[in-house]
Length: 256
Image (cartoon, rainbow, N blue to C red; front, side, top):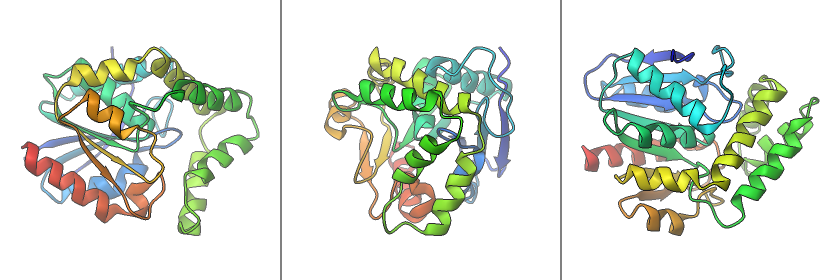
């Protein structure tokens, strides 16, 4: 399959290859702070617009987790990438996990930024309820409420409004279908199977209200490194980039 994924490259160095994957209703620009940081390490950094997001066309095979992960894997083949560290934010982390677990020969490192993996009991039902609320949200009011809930009372108001505007751009289908796909994936424990199949070190960075159950993740992947930001909501790469960059750097140092 062709990937159907458009991407932006930062840096051309030889110190590793990084694939950066944005989350729900976002695009490659949501990964820009981390992309610039990694490029400064003289690494090759590829930040994608996932199918149906940014400048990439809608996927012909739907927005399920495995389908979206398949487009990431197809991109690595198109670009002949090897020994890739994939970094996914939010739902992008779930897509990244599914891609990495299915192709361990290509992917060597995995970083998840506040992703819904190894969730608490009832996670699948909660995600399904969110998907249902988005299905006919043609006005975007439900979507906006969800996005605003990802911030804290002390978050920068200008950043909040910028993110709200950006995440209002995708269609109602793009808002609904990937979340419905996530609910189905979590319901059948696809994330648990992928974490078990990965069976390597990974880094998960959460917040004070994480989507992942840290204890559950540690049981599934004893080699996992789990960090938590201070003073940040869901969009940690914007709110506390220095914290995120430092944790990613340390993960790379100890897993090189």
